[in-house]
Length: 191
Image 1 (spheres, rainbow, N blue to C red):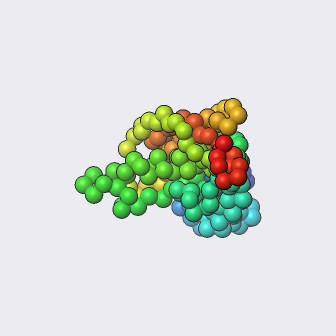
Image 2 (cartoon, rainbow, N blue to C red):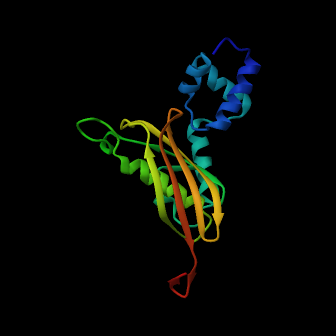
Image 3 (tube, rainbow, N blue to C red):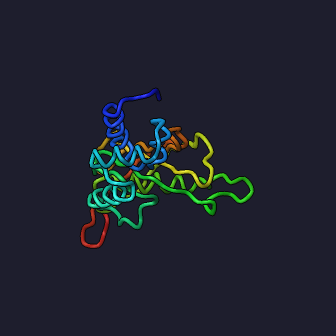
């Protein structure tokens, strides 16, 4: 990015944090071509809290909308949720989640993040995955951060069609279209 004036950089900084609130000061400094103290000063002037406080606030807001599961059951960290419409989560992977020989992340972690996000997005008390059409697009290295975004495409009675796209550094690594079913509980039985 070319040399920007302070006001323009601060305007773009606000926009960038709005789009992805979990960026570190180091990532932002690299993006804008300035020092980390400059980013911290810009955040201070704009009233933008540090990453730890931003992520805690996002998680608190997102969890309030959960109906089908508890926060502990979501794979990854839920950062945005608008029940019945869309949601986002982030998962910090570890070396232990990968294959020992190759360091490639095991696919079930990516699927579990996508599946739990799709269930969280559907507005219901008892929600189950009925059908999945999934494609792994690119291997993920253990230790990378995976972002998942879920969007409700259609809602027909108890059936919801949810598209989940997972990315690493804005590069798509997984995509799944899921049919999710919201059941009603009546006198101990599901209808």
